[in-house]
Length: 228
View 1 (cartoon, one colour):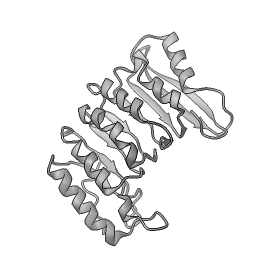
View 2 (cartoon, one colour):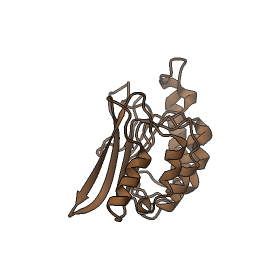
View 3 (cartoon, one colour):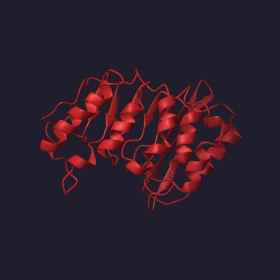
């Protein structure tokens, strides 16, 4: 995992002497610990399955992503957080394979700010559609209107999602990559219609975060993001 000159802090979460989570976060000091190294250390120490995996901020190398679906201890994840890990340069097929592997157990998936491009989306949709998620954060990614509609249709079986977040489609962004609200408002309504054709959403946020119009961000109390 790379993030410029950074140090990956590797923390193990324990509950009743059982390893339940692994957190790897970039800290601006120096490069010294790899994602693979953390997994190997965890597997040497304890054989218990991980429930929580957080890899946040920085870059994942191709081999790092591939190893995600190979470790037996990751087969029962309940919470996967890859927020602000930049994924636009690598194949997402290994992530898709991991999602299929942990579909029965995964409850939380955070892919916020990963700069995933719509051309990569198809690699994770089959795995995503098989999951039993209750929380899904997908804001701050580079999605076209068509890709977002496809993504929403693939959440047909995710009736327990609450909350869920999605970015504004690229068609609503101006040359400064800011939302043009006159264009965005009807597109958002169209996305909501697409979603309601397959399921009824509970708490959903579509658009930039925080909203430049009202300053709101996704929260547990949020019903629908309807700023004009």
